[in-house]
Length: 232
Length: 232
Image 1 (cartoon, chains in turn purple, blue):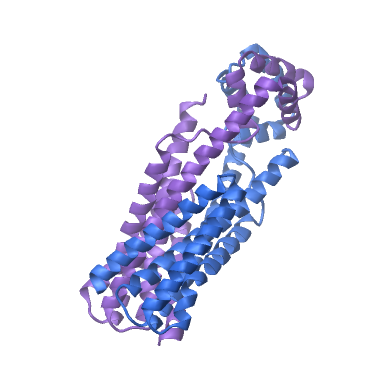
Image 2 (cartoon, one colour; image 1 turned 90 degrees about the vertical axis):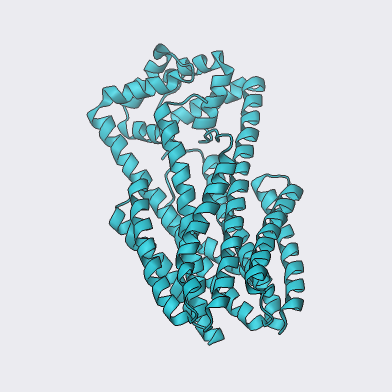
């Protein structure tokens, strides 16, 4: 698909950052909250470690494979829509030309101003198909291998994120102490992660850090309250 | 932003389905895998129930708030990019006109064919900004309230999905029996969910069902093996 290098680069790095953000937000938050919740109900850290590692395995695989399948289905969606546009450009060029005229009309471009552009597209059917993909459907061609990279990035970020809150439970036998250290460590990690995320996504870093800490804190508090209410 | 009703409708229902898919895939998979993993290491269902409910609380809040913040940041990204395009159209119309010509050039539309369109856009600066948002940046205007609806949909789908695999652990005291029933129930739910998801997203329903079962099965198997290796 024709496109300026600038746009492609923006697109690529945006997707990787997005995958890391997806994996690490949940990886930091859910295992932390689960461990905190169990600490509210159970004294022994060994069960917390077992549950935490099981959660990290399940969560990283579920999110990673989920990301893989989502990227694959984006690619399939693009391919099937492209085939349809190719058929339409080939078999119904008149109707397709009217679609372009209507679209441009919605931006205040009259039929006379649109006519030369439509004639130019008619001369190059493949470019016309690309034009429709971008302009009518708003779809970008997915990169090949995107699905695999996406899956590995999400899963890896989840594991890295999840081991941070769980680490203290490896070194203490009683949950109380581990919970305090885990909370401090996770708060710090959420703060740093939120700040860096803000830098990359263009949001104000301080606000991004505060929001990330809030999400992790709320999730952990809810898990803690529920686990203590049932188990304690 | 000008757009045909057809496109808007496609966009909206697609986003809601996507939110349900995001929430329910993880909701069915992770609590199931966690419960299965703990069943490999622990005999009493009460700890599994505590851990499972803590996980559902943590997971639904983390994913729901994550979805809320993601939708909010999409809206902010759109607003800031739109301000930039407005400035460029107002202050640097010459450079902006060249951008349009270059973009159209990449689709085989020459400068002469592009000129009438550019003149028409120049006559309506706001429409020109909308045109750049869609055509240069590929961004759609987010719906207001999208963030809140998205958060509630993801979190609700996670809770509904998570209670299915956990339900049997409420009714049995020994994990072995609960695990068998939970596996059957979850396999069935993953099958139905994958099938319906395929119908909505346009993927072949049978293949979608098989993939969904595979993801859930792999995540649960990994969690089970890890939990048994540590805890058993």
